[in-house]
Image (cartoon, rainbow, N blue to C red; front, side, top):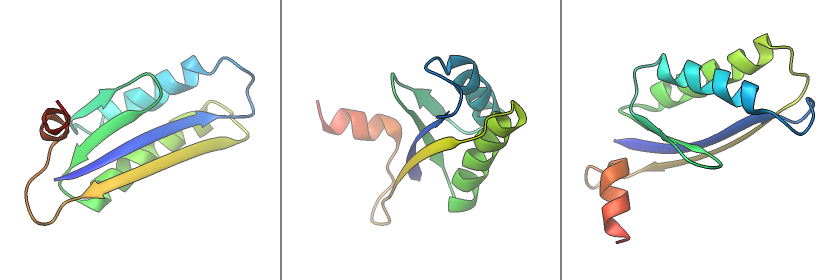
Length: 95
């Protein structure tokens, strides 16, 4: 399982960007992938890098379609090849 942490938001649209983040989350939801939102990012689980990049592209396209002129994207990816890892297993490991 691949786990990715994504923060995506426009930097050109003022200080309140929640409506853009909401549209990006709707786009991520449309992928059918398991995800969890946090205060400053969203964590996504996928079987392939293509699925991760598709989710990021959908979120990006959603913000672009709203007229944003500049978009900030932070993407961190953890892909364990030695064993299966999930969002839940990573959370349990730090408790």
